[in-house]
Image (cartoon, rainbow, N blue to C red; front, side, top):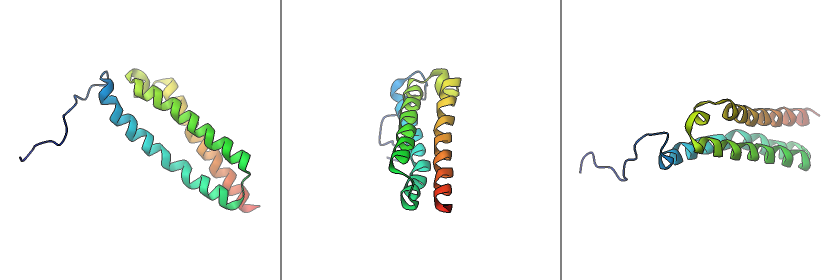
Length: 107
């Protein structure tokens, strides 16, 4: 039984949609952590609920669009301009959330 695998091996081919599921899932899970801590801190320091909700929903919408493009595969998943724009947009929303949280904490 040495060397036996617990699941079937799917060829690592970007054109195979079944293969794309695993990297898409890992990418999505990795993208969840950065906005969570600032969102919790924002609630703690008193950032307005509408502002916080807008930023969190914007980040979620951007990540879902990015997930769709990344799931599709091809050049978009390898750093095509639209995928990159969405990735950076999500990071910028998180940065705005961090700065807003810092501002609210100082005031």
